[in-house]
Length: 323
Image 1 (cartoon, helix red, strand yellow):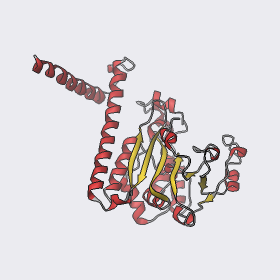
Image 2: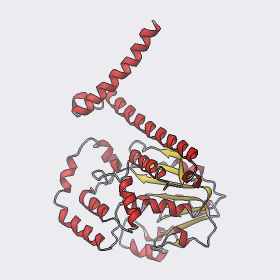
Image 3: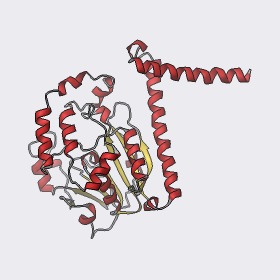
Image 4: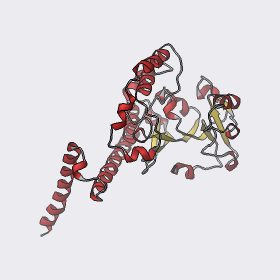
């Protein structure tokens, strides 16, 4: 998978990687100041994955800092701050997203960067799940809860065992597999009640598309809850199941209205670019004949016709004016 931000990391600087498991993004051999942090110690990680054939025990890397159930601020309070914090497919396991971003800001140097890859729910086993909203994140933040029974219920009800991005790209307009999630309520309810009683169940607490994630950042920023600005954003590549983002620490955004407005414009620009890419891709697919117009859902056909009509109006209207 392509993670463009990796090439831009200055390996003479201090790097902290969250949850490296067997395949860290930044190898220790590439830099003298690379460190790994996990909720478990090296021995605990090996024990946890002891029976998993997909995780070779001898490939699990050594953990430098053990987070446990505490915060990054507490765990690293006596450690020099980092220039980069990196992670891949970790953020979705964090039930307290707003608190997470604020916590990470305390272990970064000024203008330090948080670089991460996040699963795109459209192309993984989260396909049928509801996207995470700012309102949901804010509710968790305000109530200071450490778990999300709602998200446990959503995961257990609607996840699908196929995690092959190619499958979901080839079937992205189909809901045929949804039928196989029926009959799960009893077991999902059981997990929900356990989470309600305080048990931790490891699920994807947060699920996003590039669009819904950018909207979350926008709402966090305008609620004075996000001390970061988005300096790099990479949409989901064809036949991939993740998108990438780099946030730069900018505490001034919380107080400076002018800087916040600039970041608002930046996020809206990124959202519009994402929409344009999606629209262009859909039109290109149709133009290439990969999808016959008759095979498209009726509403999508209407939308496509309106867009094509607008393009023709712009083209021929401009020609008439020149004539």
